Amino acid sequence: MLREKSKERIILGIDPGTAVMGYGLVKETGNKIELISLGVVKMTHLDDHFLKLQRIFERTCLLIEQYNPDCIALEAPFYGKNIQVMLKLGRAQGVAMAAGLAKGLPIFEYSPKKVKQAITGNGNATKEQVAAMLKQLLKFNETPEFLDATDGLGVAVCHSFQKIASAGSGKTYSGWEAFAKDNTKRVK
Image (cartoon, rainbow, N blue to C red; front, side, top):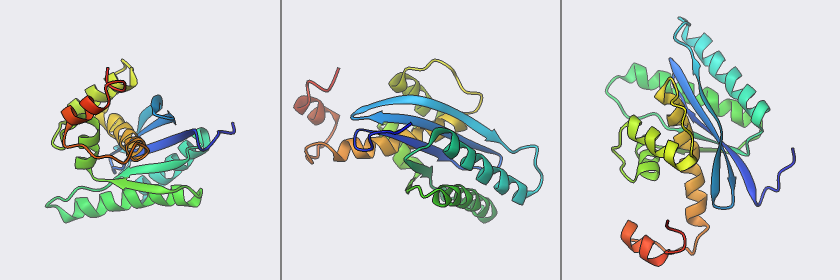
């Protein structure tokens, strides 16, 4: 399927993990976003860390081949106290990036706080709050088995919001009330 690149794009969002990798795909047409797919890649049955990395790479490549996204948005590893966990998450993110780069896709990265802020307006929102807001925004009822799926979807939507926000007048607002007042036709 050939898409008019200037009017439509598909974004693959990934929440990398070594036990469960969440992903979500959205189609953006102008300022409209619609859900294509979301899910998880489970790796809890694999004991070898390198097999997990191989699975992440292969499944990311399959998602790219299946959905032909225009870009990949990844959640950046958060800063934690356990350096071994951070190292493993960084590797998981790296192989997902490598899969996209091998297919010639641009890669974008967002912190968990940035994703939560973009979706809910609160950078400290819970995974459940992000999932609830995404269900409302994208009008789907299914509750995924793992919140990692909605985390991956959230990264894709966050990336879409960056383009939509920058495509506007360039005007910045001090808060929701100022935006709503200035954009009455866009707010329902």
